[in-house]
Image 1 (cartoon, rainbow, N blue to C red):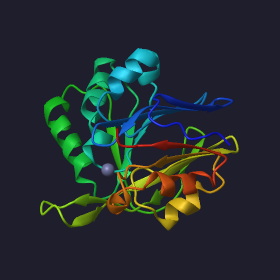
Image 2 (image 1 turned 135 degrees about the horizontal axis):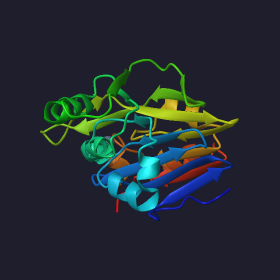
Image 3 (image 1 turned 120 degrees about the horizontal axis):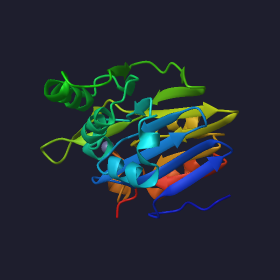
Image 4 (image 1 turned 90 degrees about the vertical axis):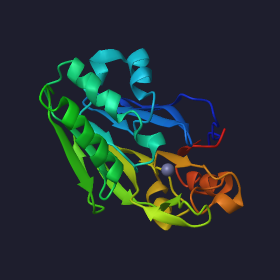
Length: 240
Ligand SMILES: [Zn+2]
């Protein structure tokens, strides 16, 4: 079993042509993940800096091929790069539609898209399709099967004491009899335990600073416990 790598980004995993690269995953700063096969290119949680990282790493040739964006939830460290990505795709004169999958009720994606459309709608070279995910129904995109699943993520309320549940998802990607489970941000929850188990790779957040913070995120101990049920795992979103 590979030991979890902490803080050393990028994290890379590959099985034949099933490839994932985590450029960054730092709480309150940014997340950015690229998943590719020989037939597909997806972006998961495009936080701030994703366009810069992709441009430096894979260039316009791959960026223009991205067909789908998967958003786990609307916190800024997971969606901060959406605006620049959408704009750059139009700069590249993209023609194919781009689909954004996000948890139903996530106001951030709708708001970013509405503002973006207001500014660039007339000159946009491609169509953006918003796909709110409500049910845990699997679907396929470019030979990859995607299984969305609900997780348990919250955000602090202004009183600084209480918190509220927000729409949040994990995604399990199946391709060529391999699977990658990405849990997004979540407290310890049964659904993540279920979907991470037996995955070839589990990407598990360990964003809690200590036991007291584990209502919003998991401790390293909790995350490792889930990670160990997969063949390999990465712990991400560890506070720096
Ligand atoms: Zn979050």
